[in-house]
Image 1 (cartoon, rainbow, N blue to C red):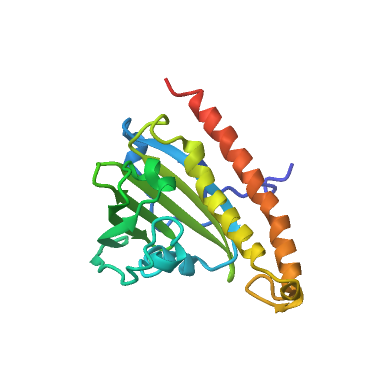
Image 2: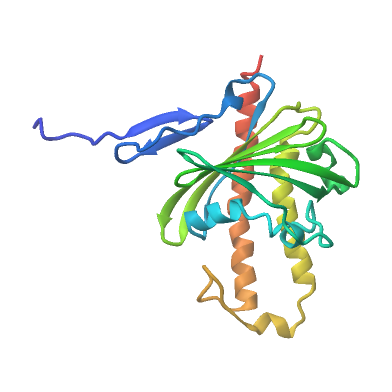
Length: 253
C-alpha cells in the first residue's frame, strides 16, 4: 500500500458524556466543570439537537434577563415585574462573568426544581461566557440548592447550530428525578403548542405564514403540520436520554 494512503486524524476528547472534536489546532481547552469531579453533584444530560439560529444569537440570549417576565411567564417569569435586574460584569481571559440576583415566581411545577414551596424565591445567577460559543449558568437558591447548566454550540452554517446542554445539581434523584428535569421543557413546549392550536379559528389555518426556517410554508396549517412532524425528533432525543441515564446509573456505586 502506498505510504501516501492515510486517514486524516483530528483532536478528540471524551468529556461529560460527549465526544469533543477539533478540526484544527485548539485555541482554548474544553470547559472545565469542577462539578464533574465533586461527589455531591450529579450530571444530567438534557439535549443534543439542531437549532435554527446562529451561535452568537444563542450566546446573546443566554445573558438576556429582560425576557424572563414574558417568555417564561408560565414558569418562573413575573409579568408584573418586567424590569430586568442589573448584571455585574467582570471581563476574564476566556470571556466574561455576569452575576445578578433576581426574584422569580415559584409555581407548584417548579417546587422540586427550586427546593421550596414558597410562591416566589430568589435566584443567585452566576453566568459565564467562554469564547466563542460556550456558557455556564450557575443558579443558586436560598436553600443552597445549585442548578448548574452548561451549553455549547457548534455552527453548522450561518443559521443552524448543533447545541448540547447538560446539567449538574447538588441534590438526589429522590429529591428531584432526572426524568422530571429532562421532560419539563418538553412538556412546557407541548402545553404552549396546544394552547396556541386551541385559539385558532377555521379561517386562521389558511392565513399566509412565513418565519425563519419556514419561509416556504405558505400557510399556518402547513407550518403547524411540519412542526408536529418535527416533534418526533424530540421524542427520539428523550428516548436516548432515558437510556443514557439508565446506563450511567448502572455504574453508580
